[in-house]
Image (tube, rainbow, N blue to C red; front, side):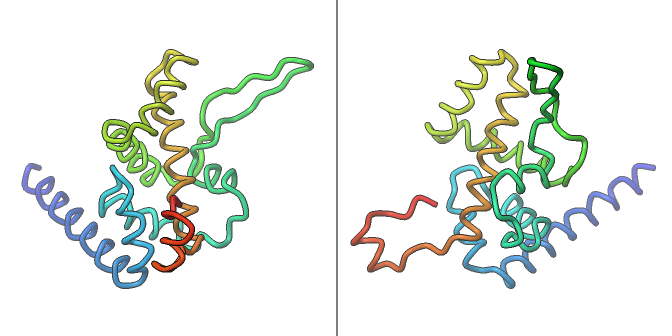
Length: 163
């Protein structure tokens, strides 16, 4: 049993390396842009690019978060409107990776920390707050994959590209 577990761990490691290598080869510019975000490492960037597959097919950020299973379900009854839990659909593996990356982003970036603190103060639940940060991170990653950054000359003239 232990031998099988160790074998599966080694296979998982090999598959992750293959995904990373293929993604870096197929989308070198996008991969570099995504890994430039604090907290987003090679694993998160490669899985985002591989599992989102064709980010251009999404027209709005809400479509991306819904596809990833990071969009909350809204339930309405009469005049009352309440947000419930996340949709039980989407890319479960990528969602988990994005939540882990969101923790890294929160610990290292004041912008993400502010988002986390805002949602934590509003809901009082750390899990809801970090999912909100993961949702913002997913949107940021998606925008960085579909938008083209300015050339170095334009970047100097207009200011740094924030993605």
